[in-house]
Image 1 (tube, rainbow, N blue to C red):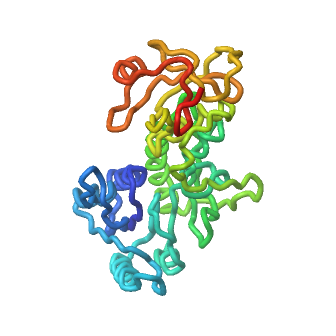
Image 2 (tube, rainbow, N blue to C red):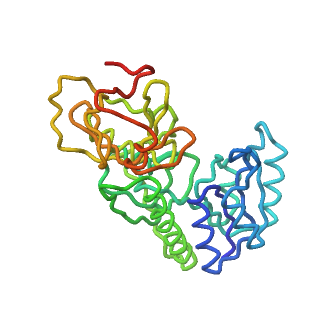
Length: 325
């Protein structure tokens, strides 16, 4: 089958790899323009572009696909390239641009999206983060026939994936990326046989996974300990949960709920205990043990190694611009 592909990050790269390995003809890949990255802020190609170029696949990087938008010349060039490619179907995975109707209608089989949730739960930009943050027991991948709405199209295939009690967004992302690659290959095989059944999404259970903002990762120690622990895992690798000690930002990469009884009379955010097992901090209704931390300019370190170069002590308070009593 002739498949156009639209995607940008590592999640999409895994799907493109699966399609190539399955022997599909990929005449054109759409991906986001190169972005500055790294300490030198040099322009860097997306993971999808890097793979496409390595496999000799043509790449287009329009800034917009709207013919009546800000970059109509980009959209017109992309339209010409897609028409020349004449794909049977377009596969879309975490592309980052809205597809106007002319794109949705161009392939004879339309556009299929790989979405990292069990729709209609967690439509939107950050389904993996939000599922962990909410404490969901499971997530999955849905292959969806795209329409003009935000992740509202009919479902073609779906598979459930449990979320482990220690799952981070980084780890769950990789599992879902692999699952998405396998499911899209299955979906295209079904489409070739005319064996796919489109099922409308139920009206009940719709939730939206809004984009993660950096400010969300600042820990509010007054929250319940389970909420904080889930957010630490949800915001790994981006943007990374953080807290303040005085004017110093400390990132928290791993933590676990502790049975320590907070009967100290002190408020949330106080350091209760420091030892080789971690840094115990009081929360709204319990205590959280911080076991992997990072100082500015440093590396992610187990608590023991972190404490060897950054002293913390019981009685200090986290989460304030200036350490309080």
